[in-house]
Image 1 (tube, rainbow, N blue to C red):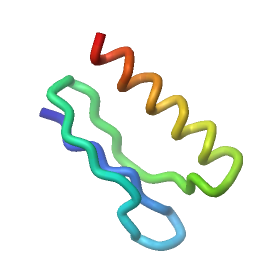
Image 2: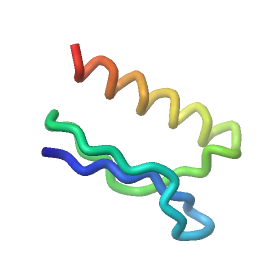
Image 3: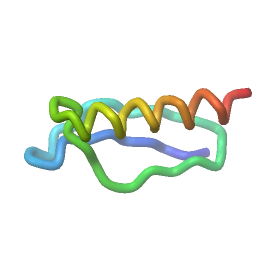
Image 4: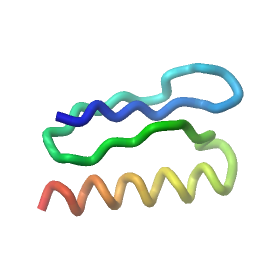
Amino acid sequence: MANIKITDLQTPTLIEELDDESLVAVVGGLDPTTEIGKSLLHVLEDVLKQAEI
């Protein structure tokens, strides 16, 4: 089971935590209030959706 945590890089605030039984693991963080953070979050969501199929 992969434990996926999405955090803000500027403050160690946990934004979202997901438990997924796939082999996907994410280490690090992103700021979803920035343009690059929004893009990275959408990519991560797409990867998780593909892993569910």
